[in-house]
Length: 543
Ligand SMILES: Cc1cc2nc3c(=O)[nH]c(=O)nc-3n(C[C@H](O)[C@H](O)[C@H](O)COP(=O)(O)OP(=O)(O)OC[C@H]3O[C@@H](n4cnc5c(N)ncnc54)[C@H](O)[C@@H]3O)c2cc1C
Image (cartoon, rainbow, N blue to C red; front, side, top):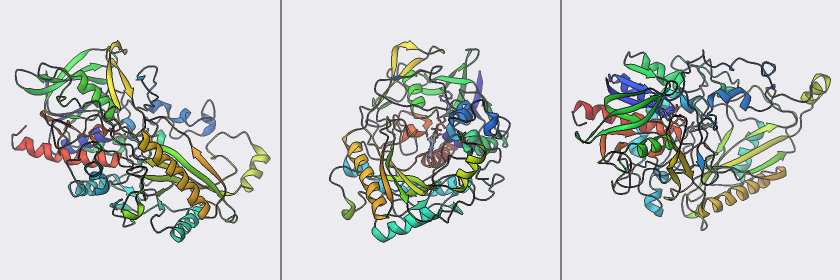
């Protein structure tokens, strides 16, 4: 029997933060991670490889990063409706492969459910999380440009990367034709200068292979080493948490049951508090599997809300357009991300839409057409490639929506009663579809992008409409939502389970609504905030 002060389930973006905060506060902390270890630098096997070092010369980017993504055949799930579930089962989770776009939510988002009646009210407002956004940004290092927008609050930024010439021109045109929208450089957790012993970002644009320079934020480069250096961290890879143990006699959660991914040996670990950070769908499935006399439908699930209200963003609907000029201009160097057009719909009376609630932002970039990224294999070589490189095509702008989805109770996950995986765990069903609100917003996203391209004087304008299934934005949220009322939510304002006070959940499952901003920065801020609360409650002997 092994006892710890705290157990953290999962070592991805949010689990890494929980590990750091709890260890730095003096708690002996056990991190259980279902995937293998990935040691910073040493295990980034493809990071320094050239295109010709890969067997297929990087025909698809997948060739360079597949080691950090789950093989669906080994870890099956059932799509009741089309859904893409991109997972990273390893130490660091998807912090190794994320796109690093980091935006704050605002009161427009925290008040949305209460105002338009979808889902339940968030139990917090912007003022509750703002200091924790400061705290997290100051640690992870986010490069970006303050813009003074109330609905996309500015953070603590490192110097921004630069807009290229077509983006600068597009930004000017937007200002000229609209008074409700701007274009800004993407806010990304890439270090535009050295920071806290990491980086700077070398702008190699190979982030998803793992960065030997620590040029972007990941658990492996930042939070897990910070936790380890305290001497309070025990990290066990290949440890699948199958269940949270609720002791009916003690009326309390006491620990977790774990299966070794390789030997299948089952062990129990005990602790005073537990943070579950197995990612949105993983966390809900662990709760549903954790049945006891007190909780026959899953731990903390008297509300019946565990597994419901699954959300994602819909993405890649928008437009492309070509610029006729700027032919004498070219790139100087690379950049780790593109541009962002913040939400401009349903902000106030003037911007109100009748056909849908909430809103969307655009991510995109300007690029000079005519040749593929030099890191990709190209059919051309020799003289013809040289000629192609010295005669590039026109500049092009691309804009794609990232739109908010509503928390529909019917969208969610549940466990199959008969089918099990290789570890005898019930297979997860995922059932999610976008609704009329998302479809109306998507149409507006396309039309608005076409209109902006036209007003900006772009030519050869084309609609982009990929209609990707839910899950494609890899922003799964909901399933264990925060709320004010234990009858309709699972977690309170401290991410603490209403019904099991020593359990905290701070991954995407806790989200009460999705907003349209990329969500991971919010998970990190909520995690740091919840850890601070848990430590103070522990000191007061309340847990
Ligand atoms: C290509 C890509 C681009 C993205 N771009 C962005 C972006 O630009 N901005 C943004 O905000 N987000 C982005 N995301 C999403 C972001 O990666 C996730 O929101 C974030 O990683 C979620 O953090 P998490 O801690 O909830 O889960 P994860 O980082 O997925 O970590 C969960 C961990 O839990 C482990 N685990 C699961 N089940 C168990 C179990 N039973 N027992 C033990 N361990 C378990 C997993 O192995 C994993 O290590 C992107 C994701 C991808 C893949």
